[in-house]
Structure formats: C-alpha cells, structure tokens
Length: 398
Image (tube, rainbow, N blue to C red; front, side):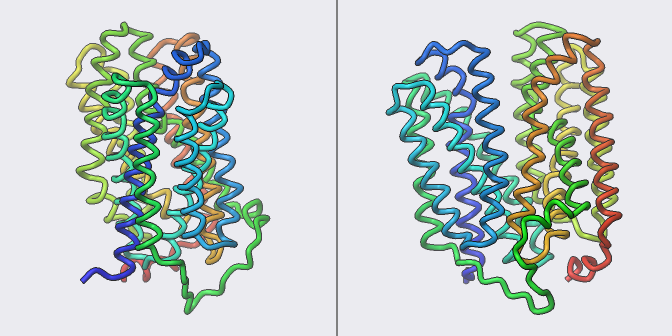
C-alpha cells in the first residue's frame, strides 16, 4: 500500500523528470531558434542566453526565500503554470526581445520549482531518507537531460517551434500530479523550534557562505561540463574530433549517473560525508588529469568521463545534505535558494574557458579546474568546521 508521503515523492520526482525533458528539448536549440527566426547574431544570442540563465538564479533566490512564508504546494503549481504559459508564448511570439524575456521567465520558474522541491523534501522526509530521495531526484533530472535533447532534435527537424509545444505539454502533467497527489507541507518539529522567518539570517550564516562559495567553484568545474570539453577539443584539434568526443562523453556521463547515482547517493550520511566528499574531489581531479592526457585516444576520454562523473554524483546529493543540515526549520527554502547561487559558477565557465584557451596552453584548462575543485573542497571543510556535525549522527543512523 502506497502511503500519501510516497505518492507525494513519486509525483514530485515525475514532475522533475517531465519539466527537465521539456527544458532539455528546448535549451540546446534556443541559439538556433533566435538566429534562424529573428536573424539575431551569434554573439548577441550568447549574451541573451547568459542573461536569461543568470536572471533565473537570482530570481530563484528571492522567491525561494518567500516560499518559506507560503504554502510550498501552491508555489510549485504557480511556477509550473508560468512555465507552461511562457513556453506556449514563445512560438506565438513575433518579437525576439519578447522571446528572450519569456525564456528568462521560464528559467525563473524552473529555478523556483527546483528550489521549492528540495525544500519540500527537506521539510517532510526523515533524515535517513533524505540522501536517497535527493539522489533519486538528481537521477531523474539527468534522465530528463538524456531524453530531452534527442526528442528536441527529432522535433526541430520538422519545425523549429515544435520543441516548445512539447515542453508545454510535458509541464501540463505535473500540474495534475501535484494538485492531486502532493500533500501540503505540515511540518512537525517535536524537538526543534521553528526559526522565525528572517532573510537577514542568510547574510550572517558563515557556514552557508562557505558552502555557497564552494558550490560556485564546484559548479564552475562540473556545471558546464559538455561545453567545456567541446571548447577544449575544438581548440586543440578540430570540430570533427570534438563532435566524436562529445558524442562519447555525454552518454558515458548520463549512463554513469543513471546507474550509480542512487546507489552511491544513498550511502551518504552525516557521519561519512567528509570522507565521501574527499573521494568525490579525488574523482574530479583524476578525471580532469585524464582529460589532460587523453589526446586522440577516445577510450581514455570515455574512461576519464566515467571517473569524473563519479565525483559529480557524490557532490550533488552531498551539497544538498550540507545545506539541509545547517538550515533551521522554517528556513529550508531560503537556504536552498542561497545554495542555487552556486550555479553562477557554471554560467561563468564558458567565458573563462574561452579566455584560458586563447591565452594559455590547452592543458592548463584542466590544471586550473583541478585546482578549483580542490579549493571548493577546502571551502566545504571550512563550512563544516563552523557547524557541529555530531548532532546529525544519531538521526542519520536511524
């Protein structure tokens, strides 16, 4: 017999999957769409996309903070409704500026939904279940990014507007799932006192500051993984080989995530998160060193991608757990919103990669990324020193 909480979890995981499929079917083709439909220059398209992504991050911070004051279920429904309406608006629009604005709104809505979902899980799940569900959620997101782009490719061959209709249709189902099956958050804190809602608390929490800075550096390394690799290979080889490398590396990344994310993520506990994050850092470094020496050996690119991805699937739920541990009851969404600022690192990666590859030898890119992830790990340790972790041990073992 499925409990009401299990139905809520299943509905939210399915919603994350469907929204990500829609986003994955459209995001890779936005550049082509703006260029072909409106004749927008490539550099202006790049600027527009960067602005749209960055706006989404900051919007999520502001509205995620407000989610602690209001019903999270209603917040998710509002975000998805805006998501659907904006995707419908893009193919109906005849103005490039309006399309960019709608795409920015889509990123805002998606960011708010993703943040509130994490806060919902954090508020309603037992400590022992959180790492498992966070890992499942990350797996579903990666499945969505695996399914979405090929679907978008098939549709865009018929019409450049079809992927947007697909995204709107995919997002319509979560509206039904969440309305029918997701419970409203009724958090009971028997031994905890709800923290009075105070956004200023975010500015004074030093542990959150260190974890957010760590997240910026970590996402700089892994958040724009595919574009970083393709930029490097195009710089040191040619477009044809770059396509081969990306065609190999992305499926390896997706398969490793789907196969091992839940298995590895469920082993994370408060009493082993330090050594696990150290292992994740080591995997990142070994994968980057592997990329550095891969040259024309495709098998080595694939092996390095697999090792790199192990680091990714340890870090993803680990970062969620760190924030969950320090966030006081009643402020979960606010803290997860602050954590979302870490994605600014991913937004900066393509620009930084281009500068490095045009001014320094190619191998230095991976050396810099390896040093960056080590600094991210050190910042994480600094944050963990500020807050005691003993209090989470008993709960984690439950």
